[in-house]
Length: 194
Image (cartoon, rainbow, N blue to C red; front, side, top):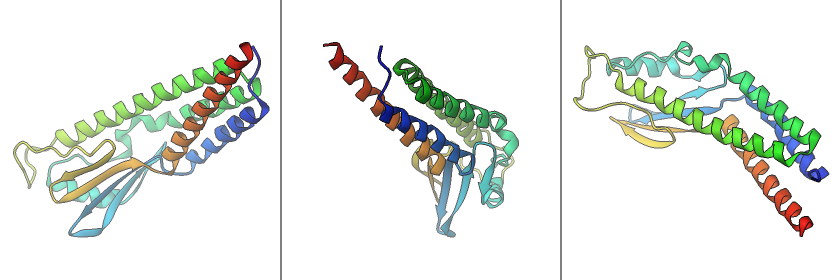
């Protein structure tokens, strides 16, 4: 079986190295906008830490009985940098070997990893938004405060937005490009066989 073209392999190598940017930028963002905060409040989730106006958000959430957001709540911070390093190295291995099968394995692992990350984030959001202090100052019977997984959700007088940040978009973009390369190389191989 022929290897992928040199162009495809170079693009895969560059894409894999581009993912290293994610070590230095946030992967995900949550924004809150309300009449009393028209400029909005933000929290960024990195591979290994939180940033943004977490203290202010915690102060507001205290009134409705939500737990304080702390980095200790995310055990994933202890290993996500290694997961990213694995994908960078695997991408470089694909570029060096030129193997379409290895690229397919990379793509399958990427999709499974993405699904696992979304499920994990949803479970955290569900627990965070439903596990409320029964002695909270503000209580609305039957109302939970689970943040949106992706997109927009109204939470009392706050509009909450959740979506990928710079690092997340890099991963989405690189994975999409790798899918395109795999399809092009697969079709080229198919034509050659004919």
